[in-house]
Amino acid sequence: MNTYKSEEFLSASIDKFGDAVYRLALCRLDSEADADDVFQEVFLRLFKSSTDFNDNEHLKAWLLRVTIQRCNDFHRAVNRRQTENIDDCRELSQNIPQDYSELWSAVNSLPDNQRTAVHLFYAEGYSTEEIAEIMDCQPSTVRTWLHRGRKELKTMLEEDCYE
Amino acid sequence: MNKNNEYRKMQENIKMPDGLKEKTMLAAKQLKENDKNNKNENTESIVSINKARKPKYSKLKRFAAAAAAFVCVVAAGNGIFSHRTGNTNAVGNNNNSFGIVAYAAETGKIIEPKNSRIMFSSGDGEGGADWGFFSGSLFKVTGENIKSVSMKVNKGGIYRQREYYYTEEQMNDMLKDSPNGNIVIDDSDTVMLSSDSDMKNWTADACWVLGNNTEADYNAEDLFGFWIDGATYEQLQKDEDNDLRVSWHKTTDYFDGAELEITVSFDDGSEKTENLSLKTGKLEVAYDDNGNMFYTGNVLEDNDNVTPYVYSVYAEIGNMQ
Image (cartoon, rainbow over all chains, first blue to last red; front, side):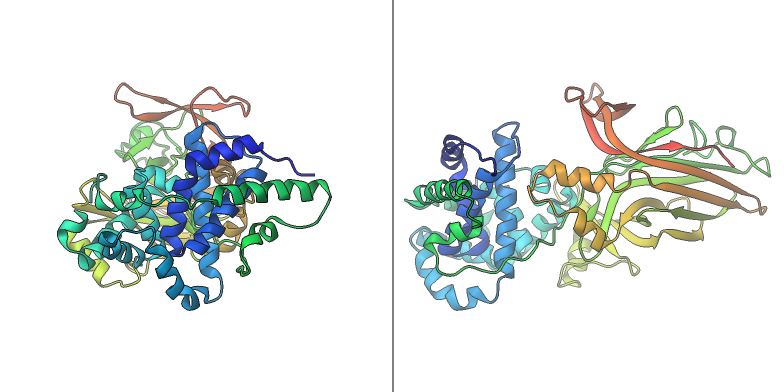
């Protein structure tokens, strides 16, 4: 039989980092239904994980890394989003204030890696080195993604929306 | 966009939906219960309790770069980098010399060998299933009157790296000309980009895979690093538990036990060979008064969880032939 983390640990982890996991999943998938799925998978994976976490930062980084991987899997699924986008847009409007819809669309039009780097840097406040650990790449690569992401956003948004 | 930004303000409005925690906790309980009852249902079937549709999952093609650290080698001691022949191993012509030093690209510093042992910097590498793993652990061949260099390694391969420098404007032009974001310089296999903090000045590290048995004309500016092919790298990165350290160590450990032979040919026709036995482990690090990390030259016991270290590659230097 597998060894599981305690339910108390799982509950506390969701309370502490559930919003961060959900935000990242939503940013990557642009669909609340899919973000729900990824959220559950990530925390069930944590429940089954044998990893001993040194501290909360280690735990958070682990959760975000697994979230990215699960989102990558979703993107490889067959043409799902093409048939679901209409409903997803309606769902998202409940969470995203109208004032931000343009920004949301612009960020979501970035390629996956750029979008993830931008999200972790600006929404979660990670440094490029920390993002590199979470995204399993080098800091120089993260800096490249951020550079390209900013450039793309500049062409899509008015200056005062993001500077 | 600074960190007190509109994007963050937007994200602060986003919370996990009501009831999602409860669903997840319920799924966890069911998972545990099923396991207790020896049911062979996997995690994903339980996760799907509130979703009729589920995607098929594929194995991840993980994109990575391990901060595996590698070596620096040396046939001679101090001063190899400045090409002072008196400090290198002379052979044939009195002015002939040959040395190998590790190069820490992140600091631009040389790591000197100690007691016939060289420690490689963790470096700035890059990896991907399609193009393989460029470790970023670099070394240079140094010396006088060297005409060509040949290298053989019995695990993985060697790549060559050259640095190019660009302004922000030049970089933007290059990016404009590479719509997929894949910059290529002189048919390079990959290019790694980095910049200063305000992104005004850019460095492009272009890499070419040379393979496991290669010979090339000598260029004192060339850097060399250790490489793993994409398929092998992907296998190494299949880490079911997703722990950063586990996948990092697995990639690094690939080079444990590898033998590297480096031979230089001098202008006068004579040759010299250096043999390196690669190993991996916890390499002790310390910090100077300015907070800069450096390798002490000590390899720690596996169970030492107190002393600061970088898990990396080092090499024992064999006898000159």
